[in-house]
Image (tube, rainbow, N blue to C red; front, top):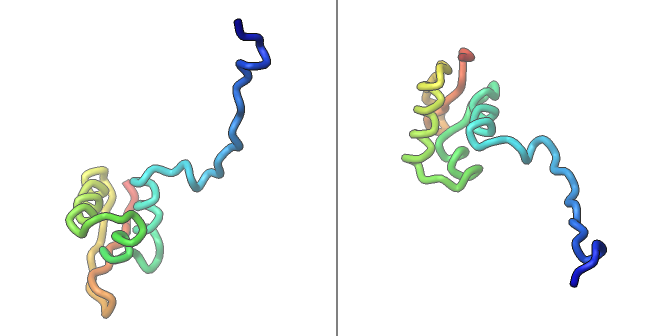
Length: 84
């Protein structure tokens, strides 16, 4: 037989808001920066392969965001220039 003290549920501390962001929201923040983001930066943040990073950018476009692609000495830089 169990008593109530054995059934106590331990609460966990609340996570901060930055940890509650989805990957799509995190990618949006990266691409919304003034300097944008390169495929290499997206790869290092999320641990994705290059084709996965490009697919995620494509999904941002399908969601209605205008994503600009420009070349620089760092490589191709992607940034959101117009919100959905």
